[in-house]
Amino acid sequence: MASEFNIATEDLIKIGVAFLCGAMLGFERQYKNKTAGFRTIIVICLGSALFTMVAQKSGLLSNMNIVTGIGFIGAGVIFKDGFSVNGLTTAAVIWISAAIGMVVGAGSYSLALISTVLTLIVLILFHLLEDYVDKVHHEKILSVVLEGTDNEDLEMLKDLIEKLGLKAQVWFVGKKDGCIQATIAVTGHKKNINKLDEKLLKMPQVKAF
Image 1 (tube, rainbow, N blue to C red):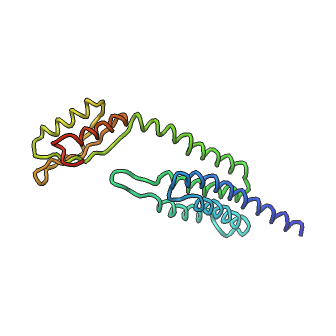
Image 2: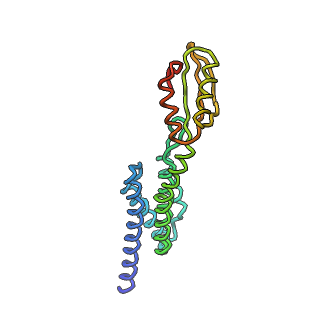
Image 3: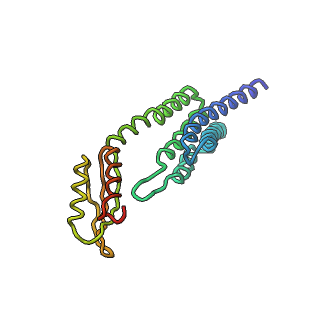
């Protein structure tokens, strides 16, 4: 009986630690209004811990089942919006949450807690650094429709971009319905890109962007 009580107590500790680690990561995702939030991350971490515990006791299950299942869940939160891809960080959090749950299930509580704290540091502190880098080296994809078919208007637009201290890379130029259509990748300081938007709104040659 004493042996069964000790095993049961250890299992409860594992469940508790998995819940705590999942809650810490899930709160950060929920605070940022991400697709996989508080409840989802907790359940993933807890489920991974339980699968690992069962695998240890029965010897019949492989942890690869967890990895495969998490792959499907992670893929479900990644979606493409035009030229950008969203959800990669949330998918990575789902992946690391499952890994932390497996570590807890294996009984390595210190490693699980340290990994959770390091993940939070990356998500919170490094996010500030990422924002700064994005501010000074921002990229925006512009799809511009210029009235008429005169290439001088396109050259004038490129000159405007350069005068604002920005770099432009033309991806596509075509003509349709009597207008020039161009897709341009613009990089530089975010405030200068905002100025470009303001100037485009005032340009009579720009039909839409």
